[in-house]
Image 1 (cartoon, helix red, strand yellow):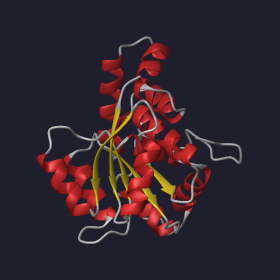
Image 2 (cartoon, rainbow, N blue to C red; image 1 turned 180 degrees about the vertical axis):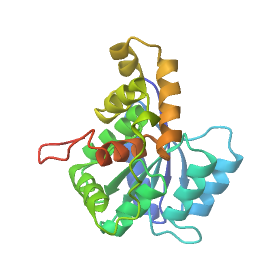
Image 3 (cartoon, rainbow, N blue to C red; image 1 turned 60 degrees about the vertical axis):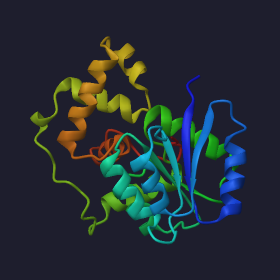
Length: 226
């Protein structure tokens, strides 16, 4: 089991210590840094040689808030996966964090088990959205004022193999599992995924899933659960 390096950004010290205690009970979790605001986190990432794999990011923090910190870190270190962990559950907060590159969105009143599950899922697959977040994404896509909707792409833009890979990503398969299913190497899968990110203008794997929803590669139903 591979160790997952984690950073926590939250301006409430008691909450940081509590979530750290929870995470470090897991054998494969290693908390490498705590930040009291977004600027401390950015400073750490720009100066460290040991990067976090996953960041748990609060939204409302002094100096640099979670949205701005996510935007900056995602631009400079796109491989770092960011999970919003906040008490704000409004649609605008959720869509904004996803737009700037968050891989998941959790509320602070969620269960410890869900936090652990989400960290593992995001590390392994690049994203994790629960039913509520998926519903908001879906509503945003079909909204008449949803400016995020991309125009339909030329069907020839994506190759048959890229579509195969995209469908399997949307079905939550890992890179290795996709490689096994398509009888190709994991490196080839990564190549197709990089092409998909470029062609669909997605920020990360989470963005590819949203694209999959837009193009109806996955349907949002009451029993749909990531």
